Image (cartoon, rainbow, N blue to C red; front, side, top):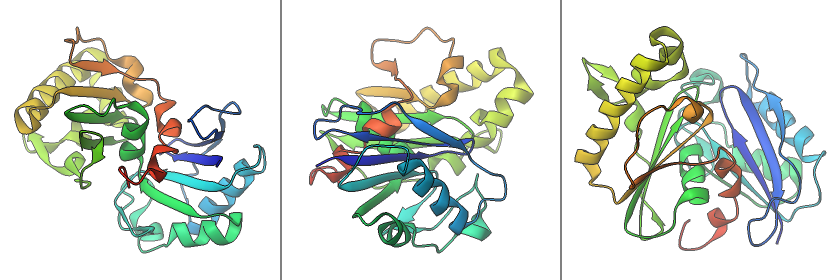
Length: 232
């Protein structure tokens, strides 16, 4: 089974096709995420990207917000009002002619990064801030920690999203990240933390052995594991 894997972000929509063992069969293709994104436009972008790629049998999609049963519940960095309530899975199944699974983008990145041992946490640093948590390879319920206050009544996303990086500068942003990591460690007592997303390249902290920066391609590579019964 080949998997079309799609990573929807605030800046770009990226896609590739994966082999049954999760090997990328084509370089990632991408398109800019428009500011005025609508449901129909999102589907069209994904269909256009799929047309640039080899054949596939099923589709995995990571979305930056809360999704339940294939339906978008929140889309804080894409336009809540335009996208809330849209059944993206159903629309893509109709447009692509293949079964679709939809999950949060941090969950998808986690599926591509974890080793499946103990409590593993993933944070994504991009337009916003995403999190996922796993226990022995099992994906836990998605919790929007990004919008929970952690520093002077500001949320993780307020302090660590792309606007914060541009406002604070890299040095101060890294200090905020260090504080966030300490807070998340106290909250979850993780065995390993993975840092991904486009802004992970700006991490300048001296990281202990239980924290790793992972390639941003993990947001695509998790597409096969999303179809694993243990993960879904």
